[in-house]
Amino acid sequence: MDGEVRLDEAFCGPVLLVAKASGPGSNGRCARSGLRKIAKVATCVVLSVGGFRGPAAAAASAEESVNHRPFIEKRVAAAAVGTIVVGGAVAGVSLARRETGGDDVTRAARWARRVLDETWLSKKRRSAATDLVPPQDDSSVGSFLVPVTNDLQKAIQGTLEGEPSSTVQETIKKLGYSKKKAKTAFRRFGRAQVSKIIDRIARNIDSDDFTTLASLNVLAAVLGRLREVGRECFSTPPEISYAGTALQPADVQKLYRRYVGFCLSTEQRLREDYETLKALRVCLGMEEAQAQEIIAEMAKSIFQVAISSVMYKGTLSIERRDELTRLRTSFSTVLDEEVLDKIISEVSVMRVLHELQKLIHEENVGQEKLDELQTMCKDLDVRVEEVLQSVNDLASALGPEAKEFVESLKALLSGATSSDAEGRVNQSPR
Image (tube, rainbow, N blue to C red; front, side, top):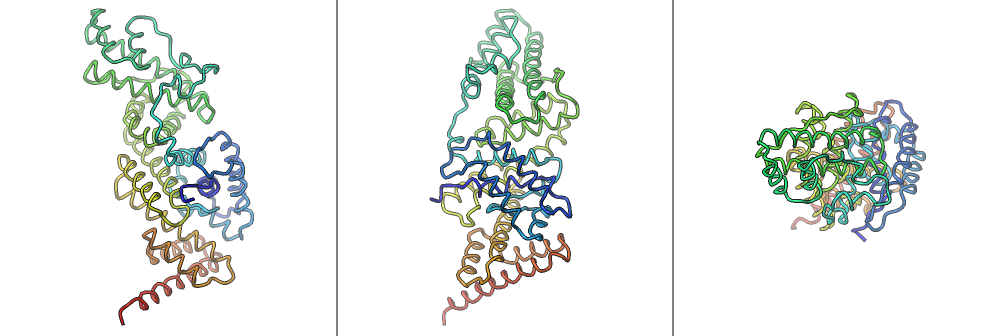
């Protein structure tokens, strides 16, 4: 069924986006080490799209794929020439080689898969009390927030749990607070609550455990609601600064990167939580240019992985074209149209290159296979000339020892081009 996505095919490409495996001369050991780490992390991921195989099976499949490839292909996988093509899926890593790091790319892969999961898209945000934190867990919602000490704080906290903003306005009026005094109290409350949540995340900043993910969800909800209530009560929402103790200066960008990935994890979060990125940037005291660079890098990585999952079969059904259009529309709020088109084009070319890579292992490539390759190029809007240029770039990146491998790719491309030309001649009117 076309709607089914195999986990090993949808994820083997993304899980191999390990920046640590990009060193020249690597023979695949780094990549395999990264896979073992990925296999451990992937066990906590719950995916509900039909047809998925278990995470352990996916990682094992990918590792076997790397282990049994000829040396030159291991070198291709490790050289980080811009895209890694392994195990039936394609995913871009041009950005993963930079500050993003292997762990964050792994998270991006999982989050991007959730973007494609209709069960995630159809969920409406529920309160933090019922969405992520079970009653029996010690991570109750109360443990996320600082206890309130007065009526105004109680009213503000009520808005975090769904009460209308008018309750805060009524309480301010009842207490006889001036606008300045009320705004100061609001800012103090927000600073205390947000700082406690950030501290909770900072203590396990590299963890993907349940509590950390729950904390990210609560942080998004609190930042968003404080922004809304602050605007309604004071026209301009008060800026909230971090006043905690657990977040080290060296981890500020890491925490912001994690939060960006969380906000880009589904279309719903992209719609609802994207505006909170500015609030957190101000809270953490980050420069705007620095934050925008992180947002762009994470968005590109996640978009690359997401569309790679859509294109994993090499052909686009109506449903998958709709998915691609939807993803492009969603990410257009974060990335320029030209950037999105470039990423789609690059992933399409790499998907064709992956198919070429498989054909090289076949002793006799018949006309039927070449026709299928040509059909794939047409379906993905890829010109053979683009693929040929990518092959030339590959040759430049890998050096003389890759000559035989690259020449094999060119030979197959030549066959596909000849096949297409012959087809056009046969179809022309006589």
